[in-house]
Amino acid sequence: MTKAVIAIHGGAGAISRAAMSAEKEQAFRAALHAVISAGQQILAAGGSALDAVTEAVRLLEACPLFNAGKGAVFTHQGTHELDACIMDGRTLDVGAVAGVSRIRHPILAARGVLEKSPHVLLIGAGAEAFAEAQGLEPVEPDFFSTPERWEQLQRALTLQHSVLDHDGAAAQSGAEPLDPDRKMGTVGAVACDLHGNLAAATSTGGMTNKQAGRVGDSPLPGAGCYASNETAAVSCTGTGEVFIRTLAAYDVAAQMAYGGRTLQQAAASVIHDKVQELEGSGGLIAVDSHGNVVLPFNSEGMYRGFAFVDGEIEVAIYRDN
Ligand code: ASP
Image 1 (cartoon, helix red, strand yellow):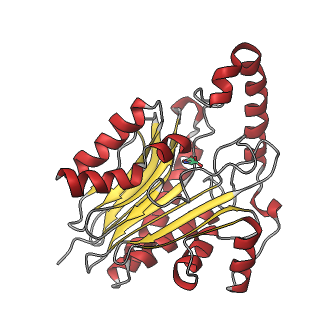
Image 2 (tube, helix red, strand yellow; image 1 turned 30 degrees about the vertical axis):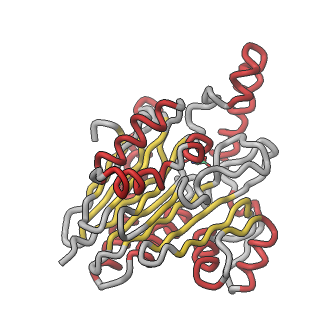
Image 3 (cartoon, rainbow, N blue to C red; image 1 turned 90 degrees about the vertical axis):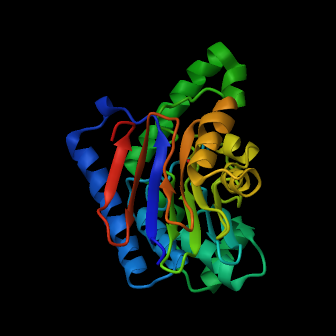
């Protein structure tokens, strides 16, 4: 029988131990643990990988600690624009939404696009109208706001002004992180179910201080999210523009399919060679249909964890644990 497994991430970035209180770290670990446990139970009961990743990401969206759903970051203009994608490795069916601010659970809207629409990606007001027509819960945009994210935007705005004063080109190209914590909190899940079917899901508020209208890798199939039973299910987090340029999630699958690489080799190559070479920072989680699981990242930390159906739940934040 296949080794069913679920892995999740809560974003990668400059997660410094110094800035993390013991209570906060405990809160992150408990949240990750609870989400993995919920996914594990779905898989143990014979549920599909698609259902397991949907529920895991829905729970992560509901948790304000992470930059998806409630607790999403702010754009430069002080608004929220959320992106999500979900892909079914059995069929290569995929659904995604981008630039939405009135759907409580963007991942459920993406799932609706996958199942109920002939399209792959819906944006903005059209995506919101579609979600409401599917009976999904609408919210006012300020539902997603938290004081912590507002302060994060204010810090980013201050830093950007000082960076612009000294080095406008670097700031405009986005090459330099303006705020070390702006890249934390995108969420994702990948799973292999008891039948060997794979699925991946990714959801995010994007990057703090992003230009309104900017879309990152998270809702783009092949960039921030990809699943094929033939190769792997992948969910990414990090500098979205670089993950788009490298087609990071699909490149893991392509290196396995065309290059004969293992999941571990392919994922390491994408994060430590391809993304690194373009000065991208972040990580990914991936599983294959043999139940292999990898969680590489090139940033200081990545909120992450995984569990096999009958195994212990492993949770980690920093490089060394
Ligand atoms: N990749 C996301 C984006 O660019 C951000 C993140 O992973 O934190 O929108």
